[in-house]
Each structure stands twice: as C-alpha cells, then as structure tokens.
Image 1 (cartoon, chains in turn orange, red):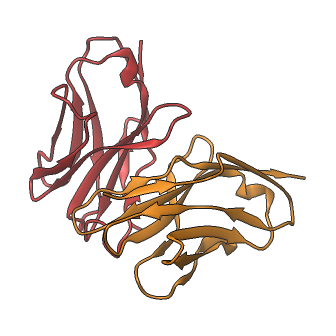
Image 2 (cartoon, one colour):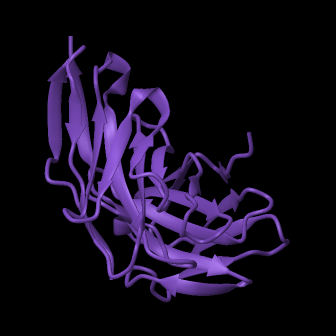
Length: 113
Length: 115
C-alpha cells in the first residue's frame, strides 16, 4: 500500500528566497506523484505531476519537483518565493488504475516580506 | 477549461439530519472520488466510484454514507444521519484514467457544518 510523508508541517521563508518542501513516498509499484496547492478557503489545485516520463517535472508558478527513485523522494522547489505562494501544499501518490489518490499530511508555507 | 463543480459551497445541518452533497464531474471522466478534510487535518479518502459501482472505500465510509450517480452527470454523497464529527470540507474529484499517469481534478469543496 502506498503512503506519503511530508517531513515539515510548516516551512517559513523570506520573499525572494528559495523554497524546498520535502516529500517521501512508499509504494509497491511505480507510482504517479503529484503536488497540489490549497490556498486559504480554496479548493485543491494541481501544481505538477510525475508520470514516469522525465524525472524533473516543471509545474505552474515556477515550481518544479524531482523524482528520485533511489531516495523515494519527490521534493518540491521554487527558486524564489513570492508572497502569493503562501498556502498549504500536499504531496499525493497513486499506484495504479482505479486506485485512490493518497495525500500526505501537508506542509504550510509561509512567506515573509 | 473543464472543471469539477460542487454544490452547495456551504451547508449547515442539524445533528441527525440527512444531507446530500452534489458534484458534477468533468464530462468525459470515468473515475469519481469523495475526500474530506476536517479543519486543520489532512485530506482523507472516503470512496472511489467507477462503472456505476464503488471500487474502493475507506474505513471512514461506513453505513451512514452512500454515493450515487443518478443521471450520468451528477455524483452525490449522502450522509444519512449526520454527527458532529462529520463537520468537514468535502471534496469531489474526477479523473479519466483512475490515477495512473493522470491527475485528479478537484472541486472547490462543500463545507459541511453539523450543529
């Protein structure tokens, strides 16, 4: 069965500095991996997805993530944080057709001026 | 751009009452899901639905819950007798290939408050 760990419940960065949100997964198969963002009182928006093509995945708003099978990781990065990036970020894994999407506990990103 | 729509955005109900949360998935999608997020907690899987039947459900999805696709476009979640602990944001989602190589598209959620 798949599971997701997000090591940091809260990350705080200054505007203009890099962002790193960590995600590790456990899966019996070759998974698909996703990052979703949830702004306050909003729904869940897809940032990017890994689906066994390129290991470095680029998403919206300047975010990217690298799939490292040897480390079972899929960390989310952005070179320069913007105030509008403040939100909750969820790492999500899915193993196969018909499987549900398993969410990590989430990381709250704060961006300081 | 196609999107998943959920109604209502907010529902308040008395404990013990039945509620129906409604969702319109993206039209060519085949897999449908309900998730919930209790305030301040993680997003939890409730149930997935494919080919007009439940394909997977979590321990949370007990006999008080049911899902239905009554008319080929709507996808509903019914809670028969609500409890205080059912208060949460409920998200509907749909996907075309059920999780492998494709993402789930989520609605904006229905905030259910049980009083």
